[in-house]
Structure formats: structure tokens, C-alpha cells
Image 1 (spheres, rainbow, N blue to C red):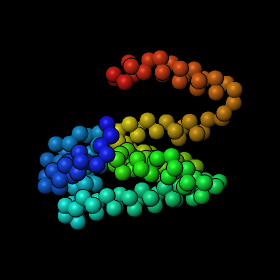
Image 2: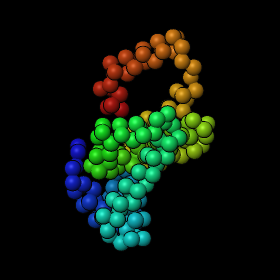
Image 3: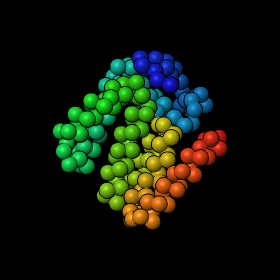
Image 4: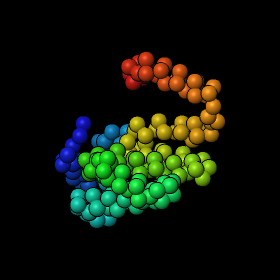
Amino acid sequence: RVDPGGRRIMKKKTTCSTLSWPRVFDMYEWNCIGFYCLNKIHSMIFGYNYHSFLALLAIFEGTVIAYFIYKLSVNPMLSIILYMAMGYYAFAFSGLKQALAITFIMLAMIAITEQKLLRFIVLTCVAASIHLPAIIFIFAYFIAKLELNKRTLFLWVGFLVVMFAFRGQIAAL
């Protein structure tokens, strides 16, 4: 669900900043615990200041995106224009947890290109602690190692068809 003003996150941040560490772990969902720990650390350093939290997130996300584009793009200027024009820039303001998880996934993608397995696993786990569905990216390291030919392409298409056919049962797990 989209929260255009970030009101739900702002309310949870207000609550999170006043709780003790054990209460943070008791009160919030474990699938986003990394995000709420980040909130708690921020409030310990800067006090409750939601705007400084957003500013720090924006600086971090912008820096990672620029680094990602610099490292992996053939045409960085076109990549930046597409990033902004296709709405991903605006999404970062409404999907705070998702956008933060995406930035860690971008760093994990760079780790794939540099063949740094441990760094990849750590970054993917950090992303999953912020937004749990990011854990699915753990398969990307091994998928990137596969040689793409007709046989593997056929197997992947078959795998995706089976996954799509049983998506309801898989989601219920």
C-alpha cells in the first residue's frame, strides 16, 4: 500500500524513537527490523527529527544510485534521465523502506560483478532486514554464474511458468 505522505512511517518513527531497544524488537515486525533499528539509531544521534532522517536517506540513496550508474551504465547520463523520468525518483519518497532496500540490492549487484560472495550475502541480508521480499535476490549471484544458452533459457522459462502457475500456493508458504 502506498503512503504518499509517509504518515505511517512518520508515526512509527515517532513511536520507535521513544522506545527502549528491547521494546523496539518486541513491537515491530521482524521483516522490517533493520529499518526500525536504523530509525532508533538515528533518533539516538539526532533526536526525533523526521526531516533529517529523510535527508540522510535521500543522500545515501542518491549516492548509491549515482555510484551504481557510474559503475554499470554504458551511458550514465541517459541512465539518470531514465531513472528520473520513469518515476523511480518519486517512488523513493513514498516507498521509503522499499527504496532503501533497493539501494542495498544495487550495492549487492555491484558485488556480483566484482565476484564478492560474502559482500553480496551481507548486503542482500541487510536489504531483507529492511524489506523482507528483498531476500529473493539471494538467488541472483548463482543465476549470474549460469551460462546462457538455449537449454538454460528453456529451463528458466519452464521454471518461471511453473512458479507462475503455483504462485498462490507459494505465496501462502
